[in-house]
Image (cartoon, rainbow, N blue to C red; front, top):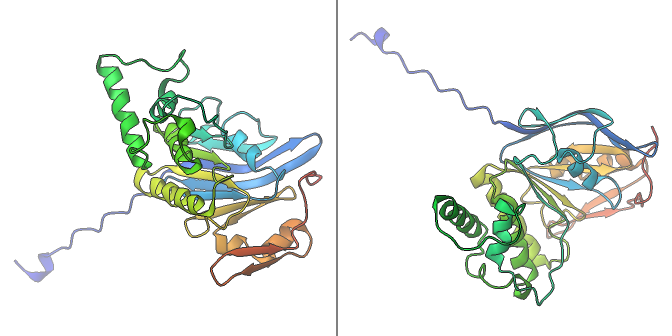
Length: 284
């Protein structure tokens, strides 16, 4: 065989990551004011994105638009290439942290199971048959995924805040969504549990290829785990990596006033001069 006849096989093309969530020119206007507008965003499968900003800036409104609970006033939002609609099973949702009565006897495993068939009456009863077996297997899989196997059969009211939060994340994941929306899941947790839950969510993104949008008021527990940040303030948004978005220049532009961002020796971000925008949004 002559040398000229030796042909290297072509390098296979890298697969293009699927776009899980897409905003184009999106905006929401309520009561004559823009909550936010001109949002252009693509979130790929496996991305971990934090939605950050002061109280009342419109972070939860962004989640409602993705869930199809709030119509856009401008632009579009698509889930896996289709318009966002209410009840889309491709979207898992964990609302702001609920408190469980210490005397609540429902087990963690039953709480997770409600994510599969919670629209039916009552907690599922033990039974036979392929469907019941498959459901139990899926519940056990997702409980193991979040590291809650050791305590999942204990009453939910007896568990710590971090243990409860892991089971609630499992409930949101059990139906195999492509997108997971978490609204303030770190609220009321201590720093250790905040770090633990942040690491868990990043692992879910990487291993399950689930796109996660997590609403948070303080980005510090998350900053080393994130792919991107959506900062919402004053009717506007800034989107990029934490290093690109949480800067003095970017936040001063969002707030239309001087804001300074400092990084401490242990890596925490401190924002100084952030105006209180909890009770108003920008005019058009």
